[in-house]
Length: 432
Image 1 (cartoon, rainbow, N blue to C red):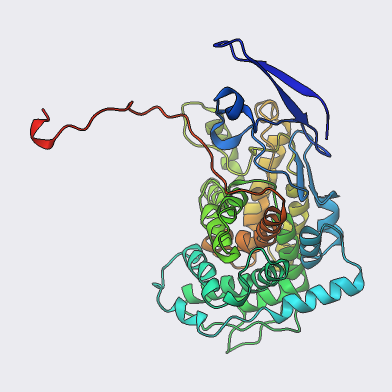
Image 2: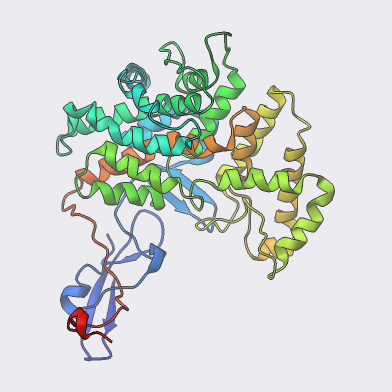
């Protein structure tokens, strides 16, 4: 840690205070304000935590200006190109890439936990057929603690590990069952002879009346999508998991809270919005008119899938997904897909047009993921569910890191109160 300091002065009293500055492995320095309230009686005001480091973490690093995303130090494009999702899961959980024996043991443990307790499937029949799959996910994942309560001591490292394996293994089964229920088809049980992504696709698309063969191209694209969405530092849903977990809530409850946060359209629904926008544009000839609307400050229309709260450069995940989109569309015989052509032209405009370049509105990960998932045959209601399946490993890794850190306390943000000052109660019959 850096020994640099920052001296601040309270102009009301003239009192000065020296605050330590901490420097991590990468990224901007952080001012330690933990004693600000104790010494000055002051809180900081930072709506949305845009300039606040809420925790110390060794898992994920983002440099938005340079377009860099690292998992445990490894660039995301290298992992997406060379790794598998379960290998990335091991990395996020344990901090290092596994050797062959470690990886084989890890895969075996995940595979052995993919089945759900049979009574959990009864939960689904209590939902309406038109229930959103994310609503089902929130409920069923939260209910896992009622079935797997033998390992809920959050202070026991072994219990934490067992719960982590159960979540990573079972959430694809839960997600696939949510989809099957929504379309009125029977549930499909997992198969231990398939890889993680192959098994997920099998549970989504196979049925009792026809054999389903998992396409290697589809399985690889799903693996890449899940790698790219596995973690993304302290975003809204991850922060929610950490905050819920700081109360020592069991991990199933904490992850369920994260799923609820992800369900918000401002967080997990962006790829669905991109696909809706491409359908709205409809034809390459209409692109100019829609771009003109996007530039008009008086028009509420905006191009979805461009720009990011963190990235002020090309989202590194978007570059990887562009190629995956081509591969999937080729596999399903839609290499001339009109939506992809619209997306390509929009991307070209965004990278060359001064309006977008000056505002750093580069394509982000959501720009292509919706096209891929649609080509796979998934409805837009499942897009955020796929996101939740992918992000589970990030959530549980962040939760495990938080729980194991010394000095961890329950999260308790403060506020700037602007309501009515203290006043006395007036009896009902004396009020004007």
